[in-house]
Image (tube, rainbow, N blue to C red; front, side, top):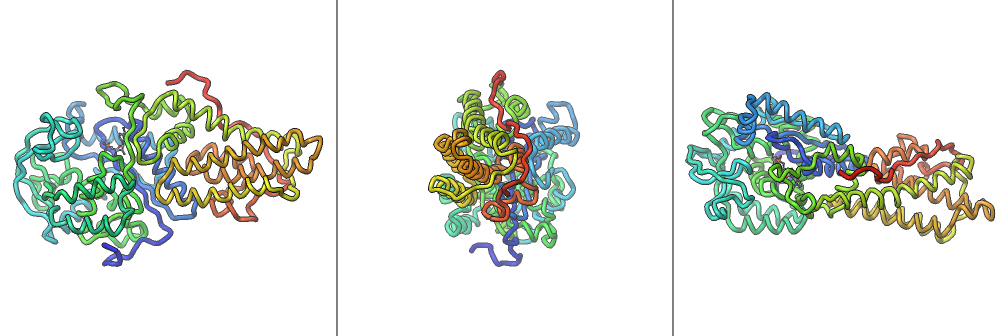
Length: 521
Ligand code: ME8
């Protein structure tokens, strides 16, 4: 395959490297940023539960004209401004209990050195030449646009554009059209979902122009080596974060050797082209391996409207978490739309998911089963008798769930994975109703013990899987089943020795998924 088996050893097989985009610090974080980060968090947690060695990176993109302008508007020096806003992103990651292993800022020395090294390597390989840029630029998008791409004098994104004419270094992007098309061809899952892949392929087939990769009309950026009148174009600077965080330009660091190439860069569809075209082209041009996958997710609107500061409808993720709870917010965002599609945030949909799926379905299942065990089985895991068909069917459905979720997670199908989990929850609730263990208490206590054991064991498996999506609530469920910390990975899912042990004492149950009773935001 393209780029494999070349100069650099492949990342080790059990290693898994997932990244979020690094967010611009021109403004404070909103639900869109929270969404991407939470999705990556679920992906990273799932890989850890699988026993993989995970590196999960997020961070902030702090250079460029847009950030320089935001700092000037705030009357603060750029570095002080980016320190402040970057702090807000770190704080959000903390509030969301995000399990990132590193947080990179493009103003850090480790990053600057890596970008300059990549630049020198591209120059050494004759991939960069000096010229002059004359054309349109959108500061909001930090993107150059051709005249033909504008509509009514605006960028396709609706952003204003300005005419820029300045000396500029260019990257020979046009030379990489064929190698890129080969890469997409040889690795059909390099870009997911497939609809996005097709878009990128047709764009590249339409022809690639050399790309301006330096600016001279402002100074907030990384100086071009040996020509400090230029700063490196913010996208070349920003994309390199995925490698500088691993120690690049030192390709012998433990982190780089273990984790490059990245398994998946998760991005919003707005920045797919930068990740699926420019980034692999820069890497191939520098003799480095492109990432294994770029996954582009969809766009959130708020009650049907585009989210924007000027419309005043920006959703603050911290408020959302305060109003509905962290696991509830995570569940809603990851479950509501198939990962890759656009989604609409609405209070009604949020409250419905919270009350229906979580409180009524998952929460009620756990609550009923654990309280029956508490009351009727002396607060100990009951000892099961022989299984009948219904027991086998439910256990088998729970067993199959893991293989199905694994296959879905291999494609970052987060919502589909949750759907599969909730199918088993629905089956378990039907089983409770059909078996009516409360009625068996008097008539057939042994059968009651079997039914409650089967249910408790199914709940254990459900909670093992949902740890990736709702870590706090799932941890509490596992606590209530007295599952020791060292058997909470997915290796314990099918492992007989890790199943619940009859006779084990259980703590008093308490609800983990409250109904929403407050005032919707
Ligand atoms: O583009 N719906 O940073 P950015 C879904 N610095 N996701 C959304 C969203 C929405 N309404 N709004 C934002 C940049 N996002 C560059 C990236 S990477 C080397 C450099 C998410 O602060 C989504 O992930 O504009 C989108 O791609 C990202 O935030 C853009 O963040």
